[in-house]
Image (cartoon, rainbow, N blue to C red; front, side):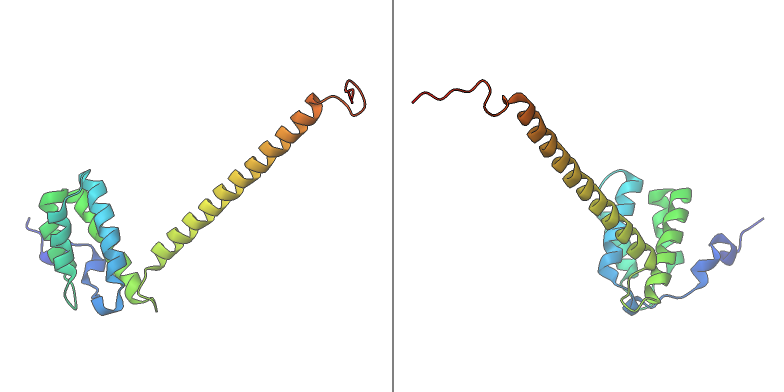
Length: 150
């Protein structure tokens, strides 16, 4: 049984994206990172092919899928393209052209880093405090064991 073109692709691929409403530089960074992770290497040719296919007013995700499938494999390509397209759809609806999912991920990352820095600083303060307490215990009490020679 032959698949029709419409059934080959996920339903979200039928939605149009206006590239002018998307922060494409941010999306390119995301694309490069994802393709490198999938391919387990830096492949500028595949990444640039994807960039070039996005460099039109209304990118064709089905065309991007068809082009990338041979490089990424069917399952990875489907996952990548669905994620890319959902991010592009989200970005075009954002006043700043950034997908809310990437904003949320960045916000979470910053909170985790802030927490880590806070924990590092708290740990450093505790270490310093413990060091001060340790020195106090090691030094002889005032007036005992110390004599002045004059």
